[in-house]
Length: 239
Image (cartoon, rainbow, N blue to C red):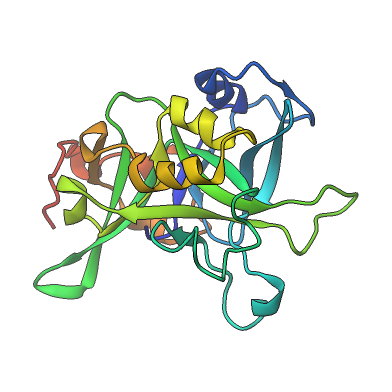
């Protein structure tokens, strides 16, 4: 997963799809989020459950444990194969489970004839519904943002046609599994099984080339997710 995604509906839209009978403890903006080019180290909406309540916070995309701060840029992803057992994310597992709502994500496909030439592609749901990325997060509530706060998106090995785009994909959960992932009552063993087997398959998505403007983090707007040259056919990745 190459580190950009979109989230542009209102938060109410994502929460309705989750169908959680829970009270949101803190307030959130009811207007469309309109983020078409979410980049690492920026703050973006994240959903967490604590007890019988939900929290919607704007959290920095990227996280490191205290002992690794400053040694390298904060990772934005955690590999499914090591998120549970690895030392790096030990402080987040299993109680830091969260969801990063989204509408799609971007990958850059290298031209076989010229690896320096890359075509951005946008991957979204085949049915037009929202996506829920499994995430791990550290969030502290206070008057000002806490420098320890951050989150990572769990990634899994790509399957079927998606592997032609990139060998990794975000761990996208169905609303049913997303609810289970959030629930504090879900055991660590069950959550590990969701990581291992719960990712939605490639046939649940469609993908197409988009313009190269998405490569600049300063660019925003719905035009970033429009098919390049109207080539909106799954697998049409001609350069």
